[in-house]
Image 1: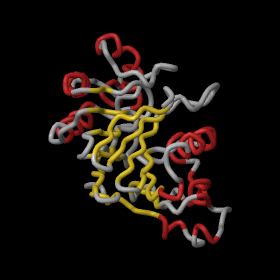
Image 2: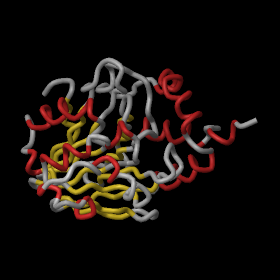
Image 3: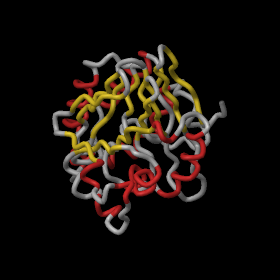
Image 4: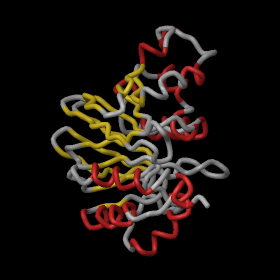
Length: 255
């Protein structure tokens, strides 16, 4: 596999692919996670129009796009889900996202009607309640973990209990262009690469602490953010938890 695609788990018919480095230039670099369980695939935060073509090409090298059953969107931002019309047209996937954003996503496809979409986005949506849910993929289940007010008022992260990977959206994001496929090794050196973003885009320390308390209940071996390097292993995961639960951000910093 290339540096753009890293197989981070492969056991018993359950495979996890970490895809990165697909967007150059002015677009925001992003990471995608793909989980395949017994022939059914899920794609997490597929990105925008800039990402669609290179991602679909790269993905088709490893799976049949016909096997793509689910697309998970952590929230509603353009770099998360604005490629939605193409995925709906070219696959039979359903879209899993917060019920808060279910009524907004039709704006992305309002002028785009086809038999493939059954003339209604409603038929292709899985709306998550605020408390989260378990979503079936193949013979496994993906857990939607609430992360509300951490960059978005209706926000979810997605945990795979088999690989023990948490796809954390913008929590843990950093600016590490060209290095996103490499895990964090020196946590203290990594902090300045993510601190400014988190102070601005996270709502408050209270929201951070609530998320950490919830995440610590899970057996997490890897945190994979949508931007920047992954945190691999219990030590780095706990390093991030300790930093994030003590972070002053958002309204904490208002004068």
